[in-house]
Length: 289
Image (cartoon, rainbow, N blue to C red; front, side, top):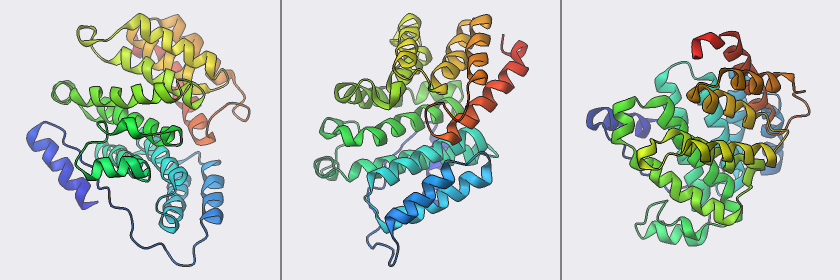
């Protein structure tokens, strides 16, 4: 917590974001803890997390699982994902939101550090994005959540001036995404295509933004994960709103609400949030156009 507070203070004073992960993992495993039981409990809680308190409880148990097995990539990646959802859906204020995204980046980086070749490179002083070529398919979840947390932080926690000052971080995220594309372009049932769609939509056209390419990637995401709510929700929420496509936005978000949440793809906690967010936007659609 203190490290995060000091980091935020530095950002506010300098205007430029400086992030360096703490690569050290807990040196001693928690005695008497069974990773399989803890992980199953954490997954069960996450599978029913439709409010702030339930998600916090799932995250607490997930942290206990990580203490039992500090280099468990799956457990670390899941906690990073949970932090992103907490920041996006349930944070009470801007500080809590930013802290959640930064913690997600830190946890995802620790999951990558479990890769021994990557570890050697960063221990020699290379950055995460410089050593990204050492990462393999079993690192994809951690890579994806690191990028997602960074994008959420950039969008939700930085104003226009800060975004300009910190734009180099988007380029660093792209380096990670390019490695992910080499390993599996269809990662996450289309989540990597979705992320490329966000990337080409968010950055200015003068520095590589491409609205047509963004639309193409959203289409790829939908084709790859047709029952995942996130793809049409994201296209409606981000692409169609930015492009001023009111009726197309309505169609995508109405499709999201029409789906049976129990049959849709992806973690339940995300499905619940996405449907609630789609409902809020549709209820106030005139305010977005």
